[in-house]
Image 1: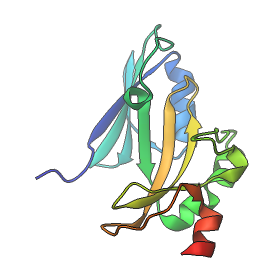
Image 2 (image 1 turned 90 degrees about the vertical axis):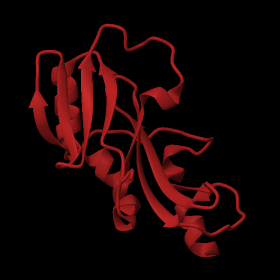
Image 3 (image 1 turned 30 degrees about the vertical axis):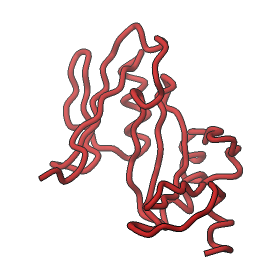
Image 4 (image 1 turned 180 degrees about the vertical axis):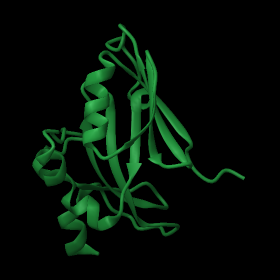
Length: 151
């Protein structure tokens, strides 16, 4: 029945600045309102809602303000450079510095390659691509370059 994620929502402090940021990432504007804007992630299939609010700094669990965008393997390999060309800095995550990314996550029985960054309000964003599905391989989190050497 469930085919994928249709929508995710994030709080933002400056809607105009956030519209520029997400447009810069290549998302298509679907609807612009006074205090809420929607971007297509995949037109007709999934979108991201941005809600302008004064309280984006409120403490929160990171998973509540996190969106992962699925990308192809060849795109994850160039994602850091692509983001930096757009003025977006990759962030440290799980103890891996920006220069050590993308990294491979052993989410058993799947493995994914991912790279992490923030939007202007500190919302956690991720590019992610599956590497292995439905197969148990025991390994620790590592850089994608190391993954290619070992597997």
